[in-house]
Image (cartoon, rainbow, N blue to C red):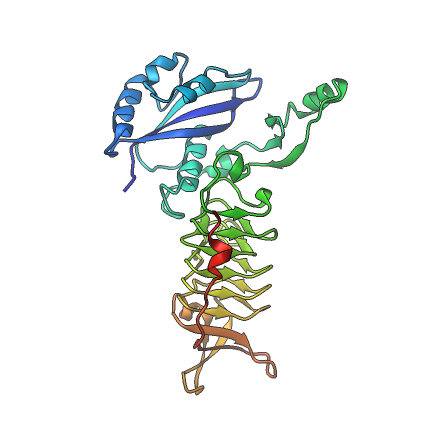
Length: 336
């Protein structure tokens, strides 16, 4: 099991004032590793007199990959090679540390909701993400002028604190139809398919093969063999005052345009178009379709084998015993 302390070797992009805009971490060494990474951790520790240090002599890194080293020797202006150390999982203190934690999630060293991401939004700068890399917003006008004067293409893909996942990490065994809809910090397990309208935020993702055609908000995890239907939404914790961590269990189906504000158990189905919040009033039925009374949906958090639907005559939300099984099409999720 990976844990702290750890050190990441990163390539940082800076603005003209030398402030870090982003950092790509192609290599991370753990102290508790049992292979050569442990040796690297000890070597790199000796190079650090503070938690983030610039490295100017590549030979001191003791890296064996020649091709890796050759690329590191070609750094351009506004780029620098750094080491970033995290001794314990405290609140984020710098841009480099923020990016290292996002990489830890997307490399799948840590699952969502297991890292301290406090201060993430305060620390990360808002950046223009372009085909020429990240650009400081205070410098973007000059870059646009330069590109026009030289008849060069400068495409601004987004203005945001978070970049696309695939500009840093391409996870194995997944399909992403629109890469702009998956942020760095997403945790995507093999067999996951994210269709065009799917979205995966940072500190969120899938714990097994899954079909994602809806929105996975920050802090939300989807169990294996589950299907988040087209336009379906999961309630996050970043805004709106919701402190409950939403999750979807294994073998579940969220119907098209449905919504979820409670943790869903295993083998559950939410009818298309139905949005369930913790305060929703739900009439419970047993396996013999006998009413057991009305309760708040929050009381059904993490309960397995439920079918949520809206009564077509009364409009009331009902929870019945789910007697169906959800199975993904394995052919669609081989992703080889």
